[in-house]
Length: 412
Image 1 (cartoon, helix red, strand yellow):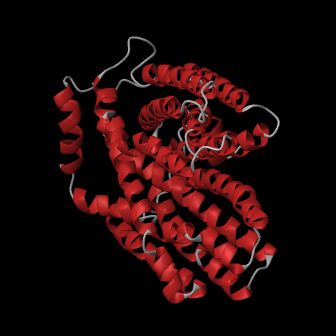
Image 2 (tube, rainbow, N blue to C red):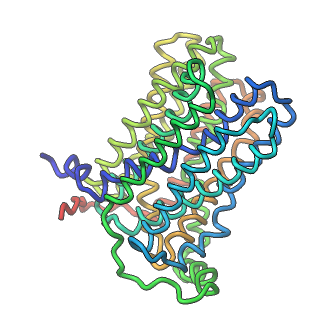
C-alpha cells in the first residue's frame, strides 16, 4: 500500500473522522434545523431571525480558549479530558432542547440552543488543539482532510437527514436521535491516542492569555502572515458566496440546485479533501499549497463557462464538482499549514484566533459580491473572481516557498 494512502489508516488520523463528526453535528441543530422546527410550529418570523444570535459562541470562542489551554482536567489527558465532558454535556443539552417547545417556551429553547452552541464551540476549540498536538508533520494534510469529511457528514446528518426524519418522527424524537449520535462520539474520544505532553501548559491565566499572542508575534513577518491567512481562500470565497443566486438566476430549478449543491457538492468536497490530504502526505504542505492555490483560482472559470453556456444540468454538475473538489484540496492543505503555525503550549488559543480571522474574511468578502455580479454580469464576475486568488499566491512565495523535497508520512 502506498504511503499517501496508508497515512489514513494511522490511528492518529482515522480517529479524527469521529471527532470531526462530533464537531459538526450540533451546528445545524441550533441553526437551519432549529429554524425548520420553529417554522413547523408557526413561530413568528421575526423571532426566528433573532434566534440566529445563538450562533455567536462559534465566532467568539477565542475569548475562553485560554482557559482550555491553562487548565487540565484530572482524567484522560490535557485535550481529551475537555473533549469528553463537552461531548456528553452537548448530547444532554440537545436532548433537553428536543423536549422543549419553540411555540410554548421560545426563550427556554433559546437558552438551551445557546447552551448547545457554547458547549459545541468549546468542543471545537479543544478538538482543533488535539488535532494540532497529536498529528506529526507528514500526517497533517490527511488529518485535516479526515476532520473535514467527518464534519461535513455530521452536517448532512443533523441537516438533511434530520429534515427527512422530521416528516416521519416528532421533532422530540429527531433531537433525541441526534443526542444519541452525539453521545456515541465519546467512544472516539476514549479510543483516541493520548496527547503527547511535550510542552508544559501555561502556569497562570495571564500567561494563557498573553503568551499565545507574544509567541505568535515574535516570529518574523507575523503581521504579513495574518494577511496571508486572511486572503489565501479569497477567490474561493468570492465564487462560493454567489453560487446559489447564480444558479437560480441562470434558470435552474430549486430541486436541481439543491441536488447539485448537496449531493454533488458534498461528494466533491469529500473527494477533494481526501485527495488533498493524500497529496499533502506525498509532496508536502508547501508544494501542495502552490498546486491547490492555482487549482482554486482556475476552478472559478468553470462557472464562467456555465454562465456562457446557459442552464445545462450536466454542465452545472461538472462546475459544482470542480469547484468543490478544488476547494476541498485547498482546505486540506491550508488547515495543515495552520496547524504547523501553532505553538503546542497554546494550541487552543492560537488556532481559535487564526480560524476566527478566516471567519471574518468569509463574512466581509461576501459583502461586495452582489454589487459586483450586478455590475459585471455573471460571466465577468466569475472571471474577475479569479483575481481574488492572486494575493494569496503572491504571498505563498514568502510563507510557503516551493520545496522540491517530497515529504513522506511517518507511519510509526
